[in-house]
Length: 254
Picture (cartoon, rainbow, N blue to C red):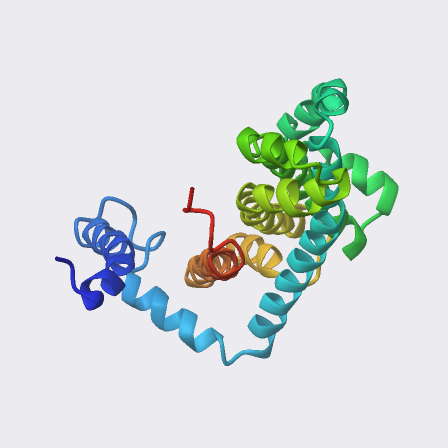
């Protein structure tokens, strides 16, 4: 039987393996040491950078853009997905448009959004929201459409009103799938915000910091910023997992 402590330590195995492989690559000089500093040097530089106001500003800026884009995407995607999913015929009629834009790389639409919003925070937030809203809408709609048919039939047989079926069965049944969409959506929003900060005129943000460090050959800063970006994405995903466990605590039940 696995002890609680060993279960808590399991998530550390992946990072330890990554850093072990990284150190092996440095020691074996698989790459130029100038291009690949050791993990200890990089982590040391990363923790030192937290004391810099510029790093805190960059993290705050990226987090603000990501959460703003995600909030807009969730506010639009969840209710619209639930509405479309409650009528499968309506969803099927719009399925091509949803899948077409969901399959189109959002980064390819950066020039279009630049024409509409210019070089501003609104541009970065809008394109990240666009990418996230389609994933959230898709998952919310399929969560409603895949609600257990036996519960729906039993509710209809008992004469329960359509509103209560929608509110108490369809909406509740869709929550597990909706949270999958929300977790995926916030990750996509972060990715697109980072890309936008790299290639759309930006004065701050982790994406701007990464590309700026690469251009001036500040390799440790580049790797440190990449690690912070990954950690930020992991923490956002972890936060949604905790919310999901508290909100959809019945999802594993029949």
